[in-house]
Image (cartoon, rainbow, N blue to C red; front, side):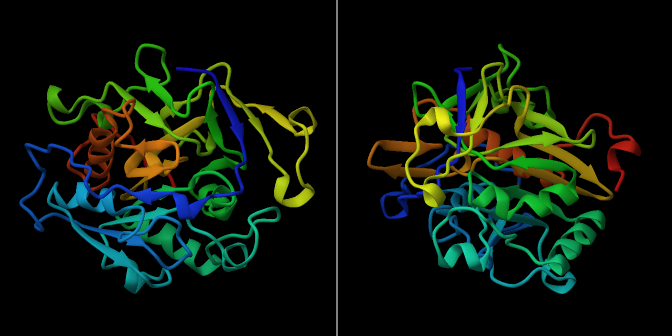
Length: 312
């Protein structure tokens, strides 16, 4: 894995970042007949940067091709609304305040206390959550929910040096053992995962890491939106070696996966070229994302899960 710098990228350049809907993953053995699988709801009620008809359209296609019933979710989180979902995907949510102004500090939670409580109870009762927080302002917008689930989110963003991508591999220990990485048979085994910027997590013992930052990883808090341009040496810097960029846990009867980067599970293009599942370094990303949702929906089962693993 290349060395990683973590730096908060407040400016999104969203007009230049678009989905590549022509991306196609050859799924020869889908988990379900088309539209016969569990429901996958994609949150669009929290000023999400990634939505089903927008930048996460390739993710939606990936899931539909595996047989899942993929629908947008446009409501606040409560027991009734969540009850219609088997898997809920929250990608790059924002608070109303941060969506309406610049993306500098402070950052507010994208979710109310009642929504966080409803999500926890829904997972505890058997729901599955895929939470994707990405770099600021998205990581702090999800920080309270992440904390309740059992992890801490760093308010910075991963950037590979000297390339745009960072690749996690088994050979260097940055890609950890997990049924998600093995799949159902050898053809579904994941050899590497590429990420593109993003954030990182400090995990409680309830979580099992999937992607782990290497020994040279560090973080820089970027302050341009607050204080203007500052020299790099004037910015706060943190050692983040060993922090995770993806992890999973069981919570009661449900399952949780957290990703610190959103592009790894979609296909996009900007002025610099492809990034996401369509990037040359991301040959295994689509299989990783398919396996991830299969694990969340119970198609892939952990070899052993103790009662301690399910602690609330």
